Image (cartoon, rainbow, N blue to C red; front, side, top):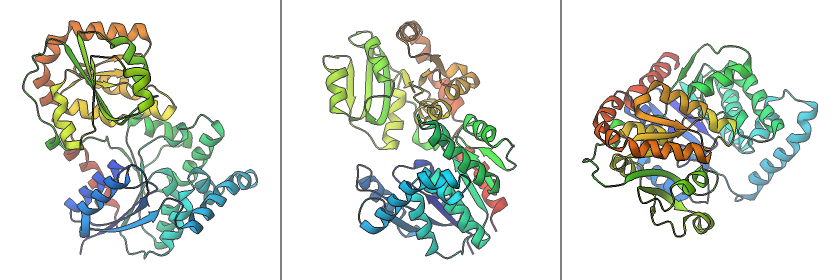
Amino acid sequence: MAKQILFITTHNLATNPRLVKEMELALQNNFAVSVICFEFNNWSRQLNEELKNKFGSKINYTGIPGNRKPLWPWLMSSLLFILSKWVLIFLPQSKFWLSVRCNKRSWLLMQALKKMSGNYQLLLAHNAGSFYPALQFATKHNIPLGIDLEDYHPGESKQERINNFFKQLNRAILPKATFITAASPDILEHSEKDLGVALKNKRVVLNYFPSTEFELSVANNSAGLSLVWFSQNISFGRGLEQLIPVIKNNPSIALHLFGHCNAHFKNQWLNDAENIHVHHPLPQVQLHRRLSQFDVGLAIEPGKDLNNELALSNKMLAYFQSGTFILASNTPAQSRFLNLFPEHGLVSGLQTPELKQAMETLLQQKESIRALAKQRFEKARLHNWEIESQSLLELWKGHSN
């Protein structure tokens, strides 16, 4: 009989691609998959429905409304969230109130889990708001619990008090988990530093993609240097404001942006920029197969908070796997990655003089960047989700009841 895995998250499927990859991995390896997640009436709804239809009857799906309807659960979770601010003054170590304060959907998860049976051999929790509900459920039913640190939640806020709530929650929950996975070595190291102890069962599992999503295109023979950047949204606070003035109207460079373009951003930054081309977002596989058509992929994370500095962005890994040369901003995680693979990219600060120097270097190296594309692509084929996910499987099989 197939072992049962329950995945738990405070997001939906559309906004948690790492969770989706793990669910697919579990199905491919003959686990029975259940997931409890949220559903939102926003831009992600259509994609979420597509993913639900894709999985269909292969998974046991429980979706919790994440908006104001039905009103009572939303109102109750909102009131508890407000109340938690004051309760934690008197009960600063309470796991329940810390969890509610860190994510008001946490209480909704707790209520949903009360209605579920404990017939699972393994629980896997994604996102901080799910950690305590998952631990509570795992303890009650004596089920091994794996926690995934996809982000460094204590580094996401500008308010230190809020970050401290996440640190306290991690201190209370992480040592009790059966095992821990993290999406970057920096996230794991900072989390352990907060705990003050080394976690016993831990793995770094980078968010690589399946190798089948990438292909090497024909050689780029265009006269100018072509740059590519992609995200769900083309907007402010992504490093583009620093980059665009450096390359705008430079006939030697063409910048291609993929994503939904914010109208205010377009009016402020992209008007009269003849060498900047905006493209509609593409499905992941289509986008990945196009990346090698460009000379340089931009991983220009601005380091807006500590999590942004410690995370290894999906776009950087996608450029790497496609063989596209990378221009990366000098966050600790990205610098660390390119120190391991120096032939795959260049690190730069985001100040104007540094970016100008980086562009000059890229233009000077254009021919060698193109000549070595196949070599980068072949080397990157040794790093993909098929290989990286094996460490996850070892944990799942070694720790499931």
